[in-house]
Image (tube, one colour):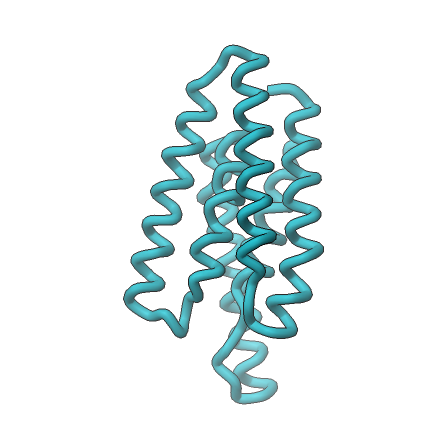
Length: 152
């Protein structure tokens, strides 16, 4: 994988983060259109990288990892839709593909960072205001962005 691929993935996730984080913090909703465009952009970057390098295995592994992650998040959404929204389920697809394409083992670190910061945020909001609603999208986005930036 070349450096340009990493920079392109960081750029896509950065733009997505700039759109989604303020929106989710303000409205507790995510833009499906922005997530869809990001998924298309990440898929194009991954496909171009795979074609240019001739290494299709990392792209395939990344795609399978993204499908598995979406499946897990979808299951959690079905169990408790108020705890994990559909926007979060959709958001996981491009983020997982981007992180997994660089290094599939970083997907676990990304999830750990997102879950930990989300839990700390939830406790802080609960103590401060008594609310139990915390947007998870910003945690997914910022943690994925950090995993990608570490790769640059």
